[in-house]
Amino acid sequence: MRRAAVAFCATAMAVSLAACGSAKESKGDDGDKTSTKKGDDITVGLLLPENQTARYEKFDKPIIEKQIATLTNGKGKLEYLNAKQDATLQSQQIDTMITKKVDVLILDAVDYKAVANGVKKAKDANIPVVAYDRLAEGPIAAYTSFDNTEVGKTQGEALLKAMGSKATKSSKIVMMNGAITDPNAKQFKDGALSVLKDKVTIAKSYDTKEWKPENANQNMEGAISAVGKDKIAGVYSANDGMAGGIITALKGAGLSKLPPVTGQDAELAGVQRIVTGEQYMSVFKSYPTEAETVAKMAVSIVKDGKLDSSLATGTVDSGTEKGVPSVIVPVVSLTQDNIKDTVVKEGYYTLDEICTAKYKAACGKIGLK
Image 1 (cartoon, helix red, strand yellow):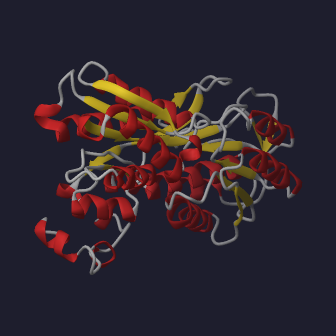
Image 2 (tube, rainbow, N blue to C red):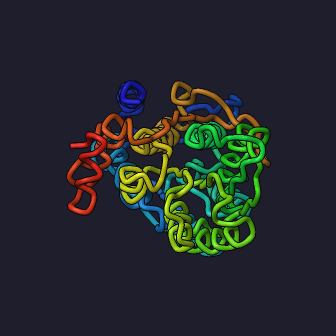
C-alpha cells in the first residue's frame, strides 16, 4: 500500500508540473468543445456524507485539504460541508456549492440515487463532480473507492476462518449489512454472500438504517431473540461502528464467550476490540491513498481542463453512466496478527493510542508493545 501511495505521489508531481502556467484554452475529447485550464488559484468543494464514522473527520477531510494545497502550491482552497447522514441536506449543500461557484466538486453521497439531479445541476453549471468512496449516479466525471465486493469477500472469508470447525451448513450466522441508500453496502453484502451462502446458514439478515450502531444493536437484540443466543455461531458486521452495537447486544444477552464478529474501517475502538478478542477482524483501507487520489483527480480536471488519463487505472459503470474513469484501491484483512503492519505503520494510530491503560494487558498478551 505504501508502494501504491508513492506511485500516486509520483503521478501527482507530473500532473502538477504539466498543469502549471497561465490559464489557456484546450480542445476537449470531442475535438470541438473547449475546456478552460486554470492555474493554482482554484476552489474545490468537498461534500462528505456523515460524521458518525470516525474516518471522515480524522482522515478524509484533512488529507484531501492537505493534498489540494500541495498540488496548487498552497493557493487552492477547500469548501467543506458534511451532510450528517441527511440526503435532503446534502442536496441543499450541492446547491450551495453551485452558488459558491466552486471549480470542481468531490462528492461522497448519502444516497447515491438521490444526488443524481444535483450532479446534473452541477455539470450544467460547468462544475465537474468526482464521486468519492460511493459511486453516485448522474453525470460524474471520475470515481475512486475501494474494491467493495472484495471487502465483503475479505470479511466473509475471515468469518469462516474464525468459526473454524463451526463453519458448517448447519451453523447459523447473522448478517448486519449497511444502509440500502449506500451503493457500497450492497457490494459488501454481495461479496460476503458469495463466500458465506453455501457454507453456513444465514439465520437473520438486516439492512441497517443509516449504518447507526444503535440500529445494529436493536437488530442484534432481535436476532438473539429469534435465533437464540447460544445458537449464533458468527456475526457478519459490515463495519466497526455496527460491530460495537452488536457486541454490546451479545454481552447484554449474557454470553460468556462471544461468537466471532467482523468489521470494517479500522476505527480505534474496533482495533481495541480486536486486541481484546471481542471483535475478530476489521478491514483496513488506506484512506490516505484514497483521499490523495481523489484530490489529484479533482485538481487535474480543473487545471488540465479534463482528467489526466494517467491518473485513472480503469473504468466503472453506474446506474446512469458507462465507462466512468476510476481508481480502485486495495484492502487488507486486519486481525491481531497485523495491527503493527497496518494501522500503526500507516500512521493511523500510535501504540500508545491503542494500548491505553484499559488495553495494556491485552496488548501485552498479543505482543503489541
